[in-house]
Image 1 (cartoon, rainbow, N blue to C red):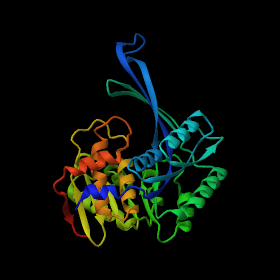
Image 2: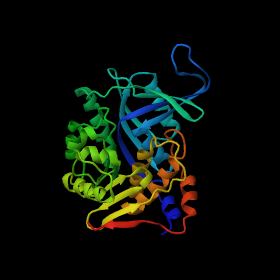
Image 3: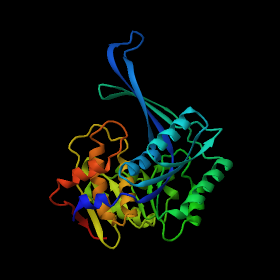
Image 4: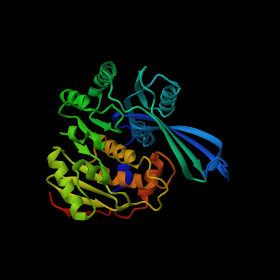
Length: 332
């Protein structure tokens, strides 16, 4: 299997991303003294930048890998919403946002010093969408859905992916659509009939309300999720232990992590579902797509913040692999 060649096949493939879009603000500075007002460091800010987060980071990953990403979500009628649209345009992401007069754009501000996160401040609304917002969102999805075979639902629990939206979407999607979902625990009861779901181990544990620690517990939990949620496939990310892939009728497979160092796991889940979705859209099978995603995630966690991996970086990393290492854990 030539994985570097497989990675190059991602170029030009189209994916629709629907979900909670965020703006990530990084304020970087230096610490020179402790505050006289409280035992906390004083960070002198010297630079700041903004990046797209949440579902936007999924789209960013797809764009950097040479794919064509279309992003649908909601933001506030504010400066941060305008920033989101501007950044997406720079990234060549086809961005279709509902600008709500009653919501604020989700903003996550991180204060950094010497590559360490000192503080994070969140401004957000996780209230359900009102009738007008949901109607506008559904209209945007409706106008774009037929142009895609692969759709990613990126659920961060901020209101876009809801029971009402999922019920509408289930009726609207066509049989050929392959729907992938990055879940949020609060919405687990509403997920069903998906092509693939990509929870991390904590989300799988909370979604099933069970403890998951051992290999045997991971296998049993994954099989139960596939059956209860009526999934075509399942990928559980395991942090430092890699990922487990559940393919009904084929087997349960384990991929060891490829990370050489871990600085920041922010956005790793976005990278995983982005690469898997792009791989499926390009005609690769789920196991091969997961191998590419595992490698990409290993590169992402070695950097600070929610970053994407370029096509060149992924191809270079895959090019040094002499063989693909994965283990079949069980039948299915």
